Amino acid sequence: MLVRLEADGSGDYDSLSEAIRNAPAGATIRLGPGTHRLKGEVTLPGSLRLIGAGMDQTEIISERTIEFSGDGLFAAEDISFRYEGKTAANVVAVWGGEVSFVRCRFTGAICEEGRSTAGLELGGDTSGIVQDCVATENDSYGILVTGSAQPTIEGSVCSNNSWTGIGYYEEASGAARGNECSGNGGLGIFVKGDAQPTLVENVCSDNAWDGIAYLDRAGGVARGNALTGNEQNGIHVGHESHPTLERNVCRDNAWNGIAYWEDAGGLARQNECAGNKRSGIHVAEKARPTLEENNCSDNEQAGIAYFDESGGSARANECARNGIVGIFVMGTANPLLADNNCHDNAEENVRDLR
Image (cartoon, rainbow, N blue to C red):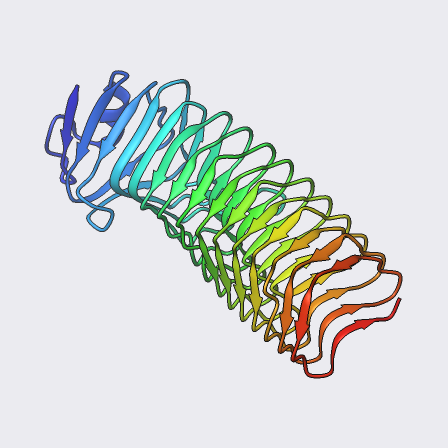
């Protein structure tokens, strides 16, 4: 079934709310340019496709979260979704089934203390794709993936949100590929709980905290991402998290390229950690990562630095032209150092104070 609806109320129904209430499962609603308002609570049918004229031309404004749950497909193309309610809410939330959001904008989510919200939240066991979308100016997250959802988020811009561009909670997974998560009030990408996403070739720059942060028991893979100009670390790995970090570029961050804290571990291999204000890779507390074949050069302090009771191993890394030292070991830290190439550092190539 195809339903046509113009912003002036002409078409098959007088309003979008009426069109959705009367749409059977599997219907397609084609929206013309202009603003379409959803009044009150609207329950989406088991499967629905919304098609607009472009995210800068067709806008849906709602007073409550637009929610979808079930086993069907919720698809939207070329539409901007805006929340204008007064209480804490997501803009769009999906709890199960499959999504296909293409060239959509999500903006206006409101959060409250103790509750995270997002422009788009994908929870339950939701799968599907979010492609070439924009999630911006939300009060917490741009896109939040929770439960056991496993979507693919690709080519989207998740910037200028008050906390984080893309977040993964609980047992979420899936992939984030080729997204821009910059200029957020906290983090570019945040992975916590037992989440295990695959993060590939995302740009996370100029965030107020870290480019990517892992906490709790989170893991997964981060490969080929650009983490530059963040006000803390390029990548923060804390608690018991254990991601695999490969071939990421962590440059010009105000603290460290990669920082490990608490009981964190995992593998960092073939990353470029250069030009950071502190160290290329910082390992502290009881963290025990495996560091292999990373380029940790031209940082203002150290290439690789170990503190506290940290350990793990550093093998075949290059630490050159750093402002103080190539590799620094202090306190009761006890890493295994093998076959590293440390040269042309300002004071010492290796300073081992064990």
